[in-house]
Image (cartoon, rainbow, N blue to C red; front, side, top):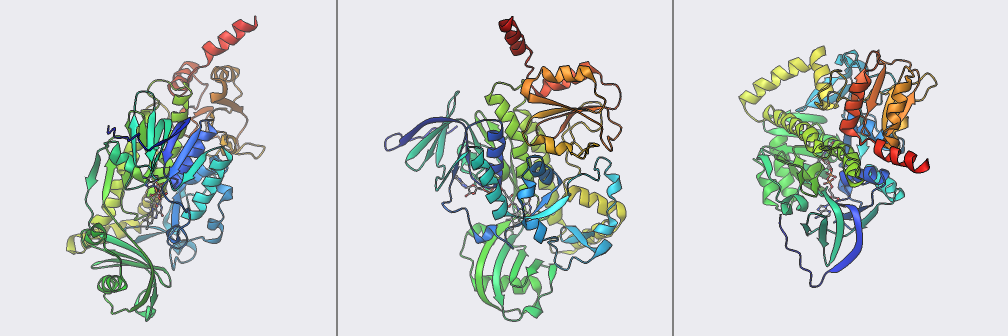
Length: 527
Ligand SMILES: Cc1cc2nc3c(=O)[nH]c(=O)nc-3n(C[C@H](O)[C@H](O)[C@H](O)COP(=O)(O)OP(=O)(O)OC[C@H]3O[C@@H](n4cnc5c(N)ncnc54)[C@H](O)[C@@H]3O)c2cc1C
């Protein structure tokens, strides 16, 4: 670990935060909310002075949210604060209607609502939240920043982290001429993460094949471009609405890598080549580039430093998964880091952040690589593309692709006997009308008991405020008798029959610290 702090002109801030987060992007903000919900003190240092940017606003800032993210926001009472999705129903231009409505894509190949057999997703209930919805980066960040502030998180904007130094007890972070102390540091500072680079994390993966462009332009002869997403022999272009053009140019990522200014002439040349037209751009208002470079940190933790979000993994935005992946990291890491700070973490809890999230990230990287592989110019990719298209037009094919794109299949391999262990808990609806997700706003674990079993209630009480006991009848309990739910909504244990309390005890002890000694000492003291 690099240790190059200059102390000479530095202003020391004396408070010691439980966690310092670098980056107030969506992942840093959501992680801060999770930590603060669990009563940790959090400082976010954010490089940009201004949280607003045209690239975060529609249409550039459009972001598709998938099932695990929608559930996470819902479980924390944040979903209802998002408004954009209520106005914008489908991001796919010319999406069609009814069963022919385009529901998503893989490598630009559409799959349609009418082909998706959601009855195959057994644990999704009528009360489940949506599998996908549209959000805007700026709105999401605003909602998360407001929640973070309400929970007591300090956000310092215009404070780029330049360096840090860690010891056994904590981390000292340098930003300009100021230094800040935290017990832990989490790098949520995006694709070019300073925390990742300074922290000596290995970032392994594959090099890009294309440069992607997001542009706002005036087009003199717009009729020359086809609407919607167009995969062409040299790349792809998409007009999400008139004047907003995305282009994918298979240049090996050269233009993005060269970091040259993006001129009107250049964008016009690329668009003409990719669209195979002589379209004329009369003005270039906004432009940004990106690539399909796919890299992932080989570990997410180095001592007291963690990585989450784009800082930990990057890949092409095709199919829109990066934000969802990062928010999933935050939901997974938040409660584990909080429990560690509060000395309530069983052994290995914090390390399970990496063992659970790294494979999910690796799958997303491969998903984006697979898309690039069949979009390449050339006969091999074209042949594969045609086969995938045929498969996607079948019922099972569309169901599979939708399930992957919407994160319906996302789960952790936690072992355990019940097939639901490691999966997100279904949104059970109680007879009285409340949903289990509504009981998760406080971020505690839940022991859900459909059969009002007294020994389960006693067991939950051994874990103090870490596990909340909830009993009641559900409209559809999926033949379950009881379920232990982690703070991130993942099923830690489940039983269809009369619960085996020793199995439940084992599962609880894996994720939560038993409060029995503390309870014993309280009882002793009160005798
Ligand atoms: C064109 C495009 C379309 C996309 N569409 C989708 C989609 O539909 N769905 C989806 O899931 N994902 C999508 N993504 C990916 C998604 O935007 C990212 O994965 C997501 O923004 C990552 O969030 P983050 O918080 O990790 O990083 P960022 O959003 O990059 O935030 C990082 C923050 O850290 C700050 N920072 C940087 N350096 C420092 C420093 N040294 N010190 C302090 N702060 C620092 C930055 O200013 C920034 O605020 C898309 C990406 C692109 C480019």
